Length: 171
Image 1: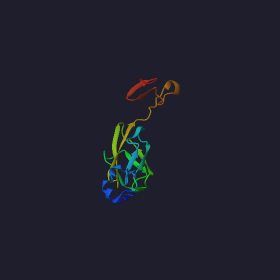
Image 2: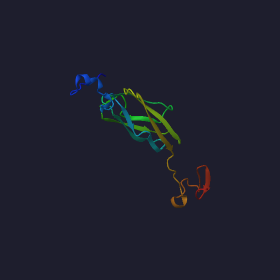
Image 3: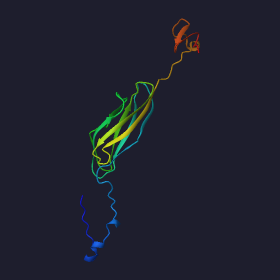
């Protein structure tokens, strides 16, 4: 980038004394500049075999279009995180945003983390990373009380959680 400055009102012999450090440029980032929120993306507790969703908003804070080339999960294989909509490739104009809908489908009761890497033409941050977090939890437990609802198996005895009881649930 070349900038030509013409100084008016200064005698030609004084032009060499003109100080450029007094000039302030406020054009901001000249190229594309990526930002994304929230970071981290926290899905919280999600019941097994269901899908939690969260929206990631990618913003271009730069002065030229931001080209998102790819979005890749960098952690565990297979990952329980995925992109529902808004996947790459996409172009985001200056001062504009793009929404990516992310999903989380935990297969087991445990905590999960992964990194979503966004590949773009941002010269300062071409591999932007988003932390994804979520926890798989079990569904609620159904408790049978044969005193109120009858014996579900018709014999006065039934198994529950590995314990066997008669006329109710053995603790």
